[in-house]
Structure formats: structure tokens, C-alpha cells
Length: 154
Image (cartoon, rainbow, N blue to C red; front, side, top):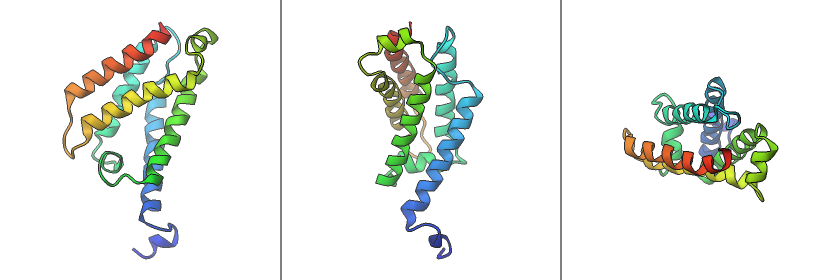
């Protein structure tokens, strides 16, 4: 184990790299289903993206669920997750029309962050216990996130 710490200053640094790599895997999965909020078919693409997020959080081959939804969450890992949320919000904003962006004024980034926050909290509630997946929370998360963002996109 001492060899690993030549590359990482501590356990948190190692776990943080693992979370960052797994978030990159999430991004690849989201890109594969064309997760975006623009265009007339935004609802179908948003639903597909949320399904990818749910499956990702429930993937037993990944450490993400354990690290994000249990007491192992550290400041560095939380910061990595926040940075990922910011990049995701900027990505989702990048395809929106000027009309939609104007409907989100004065702060479109905050609007999309709130949408992602609904998803984040829903995932936390649905998966906070190891081996547990709460389908009722997942359904409510989908309803709440759709209702929130639809007021700007429809």
C-alpha cells in the first residue's frame, strides 16, 4: 500500500481520483444518450439522461455510490463533485436558445444548477443505504426535476 501513497498524499487524494474517473465515465454514458435540454425532444433526452444517472448510481462495479452517499464523503470529493456539477450545468446551458436563456434570467446557471440539485438530492435519498434503491423516490425525483425545468423550456 505504501507504493500507492508515493502518488497520492493521502487516502482522500486516492479516493478523489477514483471519483473523478467515475464521473468521467458518467459523462461518457450521458453523451452516449445525447443528454441535453435543448430542442423539441428535450423531454425524451432528459429522461434518458436521468435514467443513465440512476443506473450509474446503482452500478455495483463503481465506488461512486459508496463514496458519495455514505460517511466516506470528504471535502475534496465533494469539491470534485461540485466541479463536475458546474461543468454539467455549463454543458446543458450551451445548447439552449437565447429565448430560453432569457426565460432563466437573471441567472441561467443557477436555474440549471437547481435542476441538477433536485437530481442530486433525489439520488442521495434513493441510494443512501448500501444495497437499497427506492423506486418511489426515483419517480418523485423525475417528476420534480421535470416540473422545475419545464417551466423554462416549454
